[in-house]
Image 1 (cartoon, rainbow, N blue to C red):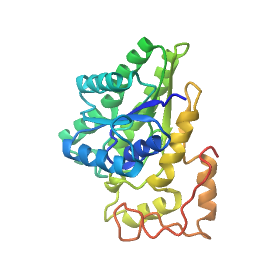
Image 2 (cartoon, rainbow, N blue to C red):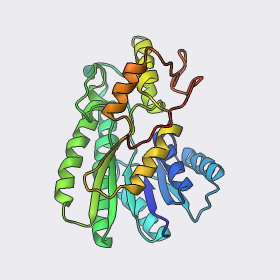
Image 3 (cartoon, rainbow, N blue to C red):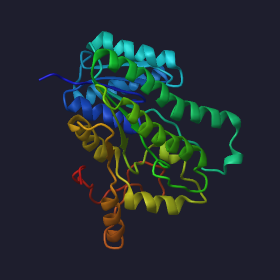
Length: 284
């Protein structure tokens, strides 16, 4: 059986790292990237140590996703090493501190929009052109807070980038209809990572930690289920969601009776003393 080739941007930490590991554990061949060469090297070493994947199955290179020429080099490297790309996942993203929009400096606004929005647009542009030329392929965007019209004070900048990506994904799916390229989105739900850490500050720490402990899951829980669903996905315009409405309602109803400690009361984002990790069916 052919080993699928998966390209994942931003695979050196967080959800991206978990997805790379999960795909490798399912015998896929993976190309990933990161902006920092040292972090990329460390991430690749950890991934090879955790999965026993050699250079024939795991490759990585430095890449700023806001630079379309760098993304093109990433595509070209995957094609040169693996012979083609079956799945392209636009995972790379950044967050900002939760402050009112006017308190952000212009550089922060520009960087977040360049990486979260333009990075995904450039990635989809390059992947779509390459996959149309090779005659097959699947592309995924990553959803987040704002993708389903959620609003919270302090999240205007990040939420705007994800809301815009939701529109873009649906519109591009319409344009790709009838072609050999399928497009979908992945929503990992609430996952405590460095990205989420920026939203935890003194004024809202207790409230946000409680929210995460009710609705959140660790990368180790979420990534394998998402990878499995991506590999089994055959629909165009699919929306792969970990925290489905039914699951969210169930957790809210059970919250008074079941303690879930995804992050400890005095921690940043690392897993706390987890009572029981949920290994729920990701298709629920």
